[in-house]
Length: 397
Image 1 (cartoon, rainbow, N blue to C red):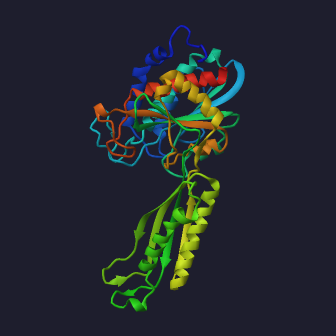
Image 2 (image 1 turned 180 degrees about the vertical axis):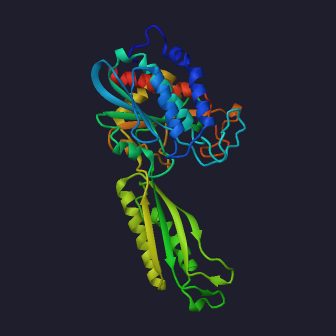
Image 3 (image 1 turned 120 degrees about the vertical axis):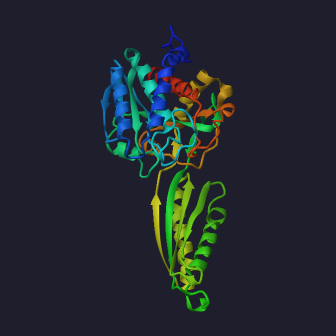
């Protein structure tokens, strides 16, 4: 059962009382987006709002992030709740009345909503400070969209010092408003990148026998890389290797000296993640050696997989069922997208869940990172309720 802080006012009534303010925050942020590592005005806006609530210890661990601590009068655990704040380099095409005021920049992933939800949760939980055990630490993170990401910077700055567990959420347009998506264990994949240069010896297209053709060699590399998932990995282990770039040549009648190949790797298990770069180089080396070519490889580890803690997921699962009903709680499959929330989960246990924000009647159906992406603002209340009641359940039970 829910911890009975709301004996006089129901949770829905409490959240509804600040709904207009939360929507106003979201729309202001949507109009004034800032790119990763550039969220100076956004961070100041968040700082000012938090300061107006009273009862919070507020700090700026990095130039464009904010942390607020709500410390109850009774000892207990420390729960962190995280929201990301950055926008994307996309030209908005929604035509909504609060469209981005900045050319080529928009909140196309819902981070404006995440920030507004966490501000709302902070404001409400400040009202129950004297009834809280332990601490709620509100983490407003910069630069989720751009590796190496803001989360690892905040971890290195010590924002998790003393934290026992952490939760976070993402608004999603592929799930109807009112639905909440959860998963026990892996929920988002790790994301890595590779760049391969095949170095041959170019020449005239009419005399291919006198060259070492990097295009021919490169196509063989691309084809054989596809065999890694189908033939080298255990079929039970999920992974995706996508070649997304193949660049070489400047003239129709000239075989170039080199080509460049780039791609993305997604995986969940650490052993699979470590195995794939070795397999890629094994393939590249074998093919280039066979043709007398040379190669260079750059392999960059990006965000780690997001792995939810089963016990904490269970606590949020119960809260979700109490708030939206078990019929609106969905156990979802792991996604191959990535999130730097993993940097926090690498330090402390926690869980990451999804808040449905799709509304087909209003045309809110476009995917994330699309120039027409939008959210159903009714979903903000769902996120706030889960943050607030989840915090109370976790800390006071």
